[in-house]
Length: 292
Image 1 (cartoon, rainbow, N blue to C red):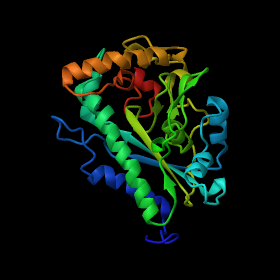
Image 2: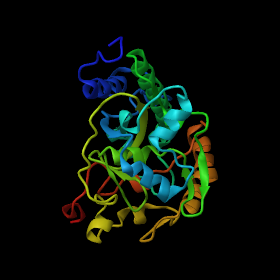
Image 3: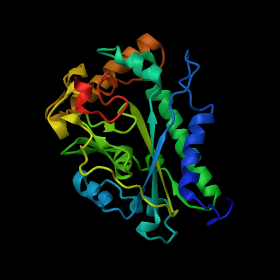
């Protein structure tokens, strides 16, 4: 795999990079009093840089939202490429059963494991992004992690209050890995209690099909007019039939959960995730039978 073009099955190779890191790296750890992994086995999917969905994101979210080609050209200004030569590698990191079980019992603030997954688990995700970029570049392909580039940030949005220049969840949606729920969480085959990552590479991989017709297909409320269990789980009424009130949600995260985590668990962190646990879509794509 040392030279460009010598990786025979690029999709399998890229998937193995992600899964091997989560399975075997000591970086996949909750740390503190929990001698255990932060994440279970990932899901991996691929989308193409020429997919019109990325332009639709830009039109929907704002001009500041990058297409894959825009951020690739920013990081590799001297590399000539066509949009369809870019592959976006997306992954889903499912919470462990222990973390979900702990958070399922909470009604106002995050469980200790959940708070650690938000901070130390995301550090694992950051190191996974860097590891994936390094391995891809070793094989002779240009690669980058958009969420770790110097210009990545959240931006004020008239429509959404806040939005980022690159959304990991939307890249995963483009890769066929999930659709959105009332709380804006991504509902995947491993459920909604997850985190998400991605890298962009100039490597030829067939994009995954999207097994859904709409961006909210897996949510029982949007597809069937039923459920709204996530609304009941929110401790600050940031969720409703109208969707996700980001301003109220963020007000709970900071400073309330930040202060709680520091006082109760003695590290600088925050989190919530109550709407991701104790709901039918916690660990799978839900069905109406889950409401019975």
